[in-house]
Length: 202
Ligand SMILES: [Zn+2]
Image 1: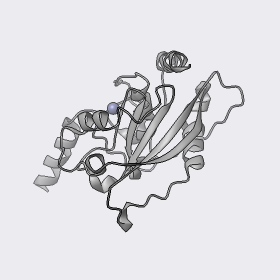
Image 2: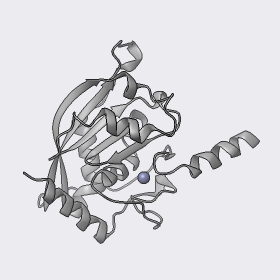
Image 3: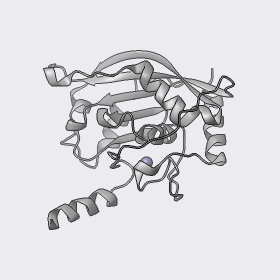
C-alpha cells in the first residue's frame, strides 16, 4: 500500500506528460454544420523496424475524429477533419521506456521532419511502451498512447499542440489534475485555438 501511494504521488508530481485518465466518462455529443475554423488532422502510427504481432493498432480513424468533434470541438465552432494516415518506423519513439523524463525531447526530435505545419499530426504509440506518459502535445504535434485515444487526454494534448497551457480551473480540458473530469474550454482558450489555426493556414 505504501508503495502504491508513493507511486500515485510520483505520478501527480510529474508535469503535463503524465496524466492518469482511465476513468470512463460520459459527455454529450454535439455536432455543428456551421464551423468557424477547421483543420486537417494527420494520423501517424509509430511502428518498430521489427514488427511483432503486438504492434498492430486497431483504430477506426473516422470514428476517432468524430468522437473528438462531437465530444469536445464542434460545440466551439472548431472542426477537425481526417487527413492522411501513415506509419512511421522509429525504434526510438516506438519504445520510450528507457527515456523516462526525456519523452518530450525525444518526441520532438524524432518527429521534426514528419509533420505538416499546416495541420495537426497525431502520432499514436502503444501505452505499454512508456512508463508513465499518456500523451504529449506541442508545436502542431501530439503523441498519444493508444489507451488514451477516447479520453479527455486527446483534446488536452491537441490543446497543447495549438498553443494552450495548463489551466487551474477544475473540469477545464487543459487542467493538469483530475483528467477524467476535463470537458470544457474557456472562451479565451477557444479564441487562442482559432487564432493559432488561422496562422497555420497556407
Ligand atoms: Zn498537459
